[in-house]
Length: 160
Image (tube, rainbow, N blue to C red):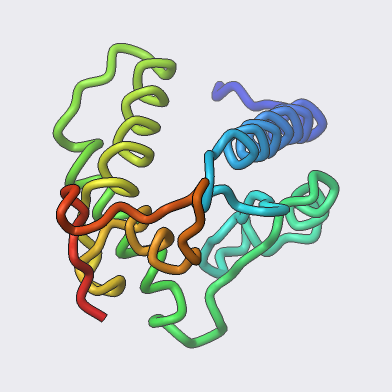
């Protein structure tokens, strides 16, 4: 006989995982320095329109934890394209190239990839072949405290 988890135990586990994920997301957003810091950021749960993600119980759980719900539009396969593209990049450039001994190691490695490679070094065609951090710096007016690095100091030249 197959073991099953009672609905309330499953709900408690989902609730605990969502709370932890939401708290970690908020902590990470608040710890970001300078122009890349996301103001009033909240966790976004993006999914297709699968019944498990669209159920009232699940959406209520997300709302209870103040998690923004984002779903693909009905009959619109392109609605999810940016998220799918990001996940493909994450899998091909990080996850499939690593063997993680445990979950903490996986989290640390993926966080390093996102914060140090994807956001600071990887060129993004949608941002004029600039890393996101450089692109964001180009949006902030230079000041004595928050001065953009000049080309002569090694900054990338973004093509807009």
